[in-house]
Image 1 (tube, rainbow, N blue to C red):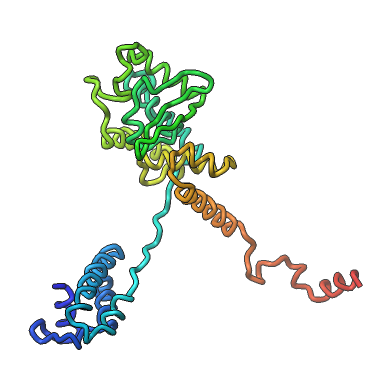
Image 2: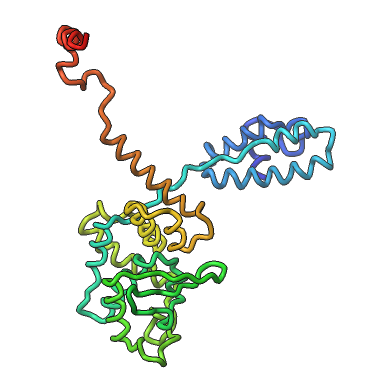
Amino acid sequence: MLLFLIYMKSIHQITADRIDFNDITQERIVGFLQWIEQERECNISSRNVRLAAIHSFFKYLQYKVPEQLAEWQRILSIKIKKSPRPTQSYLTVDGLNLLFKQPDTQTLKGRRDLALLSLLYESGTRVQELIDLTPSRVTFSKPSLLRVTGKGNKSRQVPVSEQVASILRAYMEENNLLEPFANEYPLFGSNRRQKFTRMGITSILKKYTDRARTINPSLIPEIVTPHTMRRSKAMILLKAEVDIVSIRDFMGHSSVTTTEIYARADREQKIKAIEHTALSNSVNDYPSWQKDKGLLDWLESLGK
């Protein structure tokens, strides 16, 4: 509440020792929230945190100062401010192809990184799910399968394409991960058989997205995280017209409501594309024959 006291002094010339409950109104609380946004340059999230604290305080005052109950309830009716939904970036097929060309497959580390990145995308797993994979959870068959343990300790089978299965199998053979003694080793880890961390996988991904971006910036978003790879898989499945329930099961979502976030993002992309290619509403952009009144009258007469 310190900021509110500063606001009251600087805007309403009421010092902290002179503030009375009658001085605190809904209008002044709204003014305070606008002030911290505009004058203090707080973002919407910070503004909402301040409002949550104000709400808590005035819920308490309802019982301590009930004679002001009507005003306290007006203050409690102030709603949080919705912030713009961040853009959900994802990689297109062309962007993914460019990314997968970046690891140097002439080196052991490059072959490992290609296997890691291609599986991260192909399986649509969360980064922690990928970190927890062991060789025992990989089955090379037709199709090849991953046994993934996700949120709530729920397991699911994830199919892997022949192309990615081939890359993964070659990587596992090269690193002795197909041997029985390696069953519970991390599928991707350090030379000391320690699991990669989230930061470690993020660092590997950043290394190659930075390279790819220098080749074609239009194909690689400014920020690409492991979750971007998961989102890219969901978006590409949607564009391939896979039904949303199948995508839910593939991604390991607990509810189809979560999967619908991707569907909404896909619809927004389509709407933007339609708007970008729509005809102009400007009369000046119409073909010249549409401006010829005599010609239009003649054309209309043909139908009579």
